[in-house]
Structure formats: structure tokens, C-alpha cells
Length: 296
Image 1: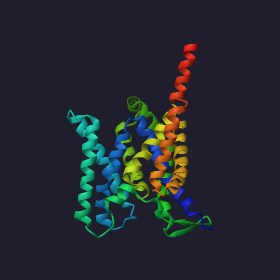
Image 2: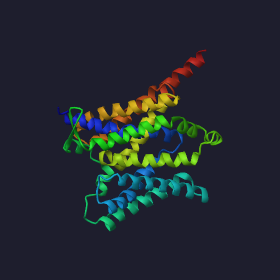
Image 3: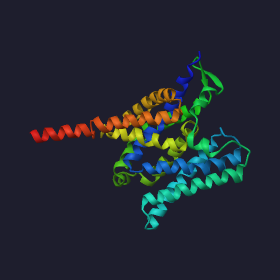
Image 4: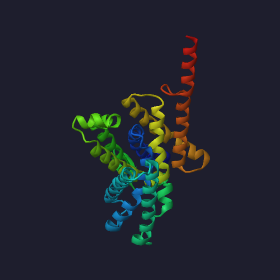
């Protein structure tokens, strides 16, 4: 049995968007959305260095290199912010632009022309590669082999959030209370950044380093406008990832554009909808509540 190519693209987009959406919800709570931007760019030198050693673009060591780079940029941001008068937003800009530029230089110095790992593919991505990838027989379907890494990252991310839900949520809302209960906010923070780095790299091939930022922010921001309950926020973020993945592919077909851009446009439309009628913070909902309050 062979699934429609558009169906595989939707699945790839969803497996990429789901872990980004769930982690992005925690980034929004921690007011660290721009750190996701930093990691998405600064993971490049970690990928390049790892590839220089293993020589295989499909090697899991590339994810390890990205995770190390993600932790490094987080450490640099905090050190610049804490030890100087530089504000956090400026520290983020300094750290991620420097590491991203270093990654571009390392591509030329370490790799040369040995591999097609150029900045265009890193920045823009190409989700359509799943339609012409080699297939593997799985559960009666001829599944593209490039779908498995994204699916594994998504499943592992969901599992980690379920297992460490209490720690992640507690440290996100009240780091002091988490520390008093024996949890180390610093360890939780860097572990979250390491997982985020792996998720970002797994999304590179599909949506690229720029659009992955939208996947990290839009679902969580949309869910935040609809609820203030953490579990429901995570669920709505996952629903946002699913709907935007399906609608995004249709948008890309209608306008003959990139699928990754279509997913982000669909996600933005969902955000605008939540902004207007979100039960928790929607503009129209607040206007109705104010009107009722005045009438009372």
C-alpha cells in the first residue's frame, strides 16, 4: 500500500511541528521564545563539526553536536547577561549571530565541496524530499525512510514531557519552589535546551532554521490565548501543529509555494483567530466581558 505523496508531506510536517509546539509552550511560559531562535541558528557549527568527524549526514552524532551547540549558546547568553550590563535580548543577538557566522565559516573550512550542506538548505528546508525518499515496509505501508527520524524525535519528546511534566511545569512557573523541593532549575533548564537543540536540528531538513522559529512560537502562543491551564495548553499546541500541517500543505499546493511556508501561514491564521476569539485572552471575548461588566 502506498500513501498519497501529500499525505506523507503532511505527516512529516506534523512530526516536525509537534515537538516544536510542545517545547515552545514551555519557552513561552519561561519567556524564552527568542532563545529558540538563537538555538535554531547556533546549532549549525555543532552540526558541521560533528559531520567533519563522522562524514554522514544521517548520523545521530549530528544531533549530539547540535545539542552541545544549543547548550553552549544558552550558556553564552546567560554569561553575557549576568556578567555585563548587556540586556538579555542583546545577549541573544550577540551569541546566536556569532555562532551562526562561525558555522558558515566552518562549512567552508572543514567541509569545502565535500558535501551539499549549504546555507540555503539550512535556512529554507525542503519537506518535499519525503515524497522521493527510499521507502521501508512498515505496518503494511511503504514508508519513506526520512520520516522515521522525525517520528522518533517527536515520540521521544512527547514521552519526555509526559515523564518530566511535573518538573518542567513547576520550574517554569516557580523556579524557587522547584529548587526548594529538591529539583535543580539549572539542570532542568540546560536539559530543556539540549532537547530543544535536537528537535530544531530534526526540523532543519523539512522547514529550515528560519521557519522552525515560527513552529516554536505560534502553537504555544495560540494555545496561551485560549487557556491558562498547562495540560490544555499542551494539548491545544499539539492540535495547532496538526491543523497547520494539514492546512499548510493545501496552502502550498494552491499557491505553488514551499510547504514549510504554507505550514507557517496556516499557523499564523490560527493565531490570528485565537487573538480575536480566544477564550482566555481574545480581543472580542475581552470586549464582550467589559461590556457585560459595564452593564452590570
